[in-house]
Image (cartoon, rainbow, N blue to C red; front, top):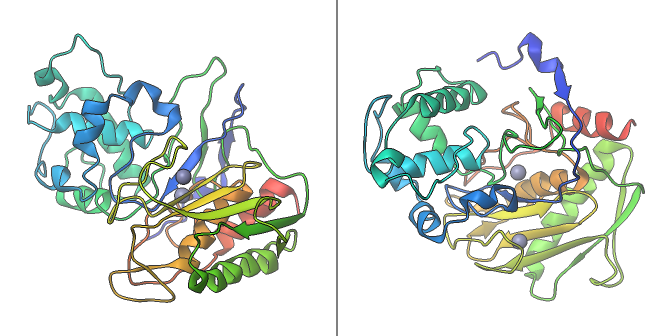
Length: 318
Ligand SMILES: [Zn+2]
Ligand SMILES: [Zn+2]
């Protein structure tokens, strides 16, 4: 598949008024619709229906198209809204029936999703679209749809930055592990930092003498850990990180982690590479081989690509 379209070297950056420091809830199935940016979606009842984490609600709706009214379509709307494809705002006056209606707006959102993921833009919830939606992926949105007084469109066909392009102002950063971080997974995270260090030619990463004093704080967390993006147990959110200069990186303690390609487990180093990309200011890439591609599979390893390095260099001018 030719992913490198002419437009992929073009990007559109419109500055936002506000600098967002949002968690990138990374590498998930279909969970955590709790990002602060979508505060209008924070209806506990709706969220409860969409946080099963296994994508079952999507599989049940396969084949749905415009005009259909099927129970659960509102969860599809929440899903697409969460990832930035639909400005779906739950209106308390709207009945459940209307919420479960596959309307024109939803069709446009499905098409937009399909284009993003290099699928046929049919606008229907076909098999390949459902297959993509149930892939492990990052919980942070692919596109900016939330409204600001200044236009917030910020789309890059390949690498992306966070809205407002926040970045670090120092080249030497320290990282530290929380007291409950499993020691066997420290070496693969060290490796991930080493790879970014070598590839960037810009940053130098070193272990901090204390966790509290580290620029980048890495911890294992479980379910609601009070940062607005609760993990959802096994099969859901695997990890997330915050944009510069927050520095927090959380791995979901309920996931099955591994060192290297182990069936049904996620490679710690690969996921760390993705999350460190977020810590440094990279968003998601539409380039499938990039570490910043939003989906990630169990049982595989992945490394940095030229797209990731180009993104970092574009952000820091190195
Ligand atoms: Zn991510
Ligand atoms: Zn967290």
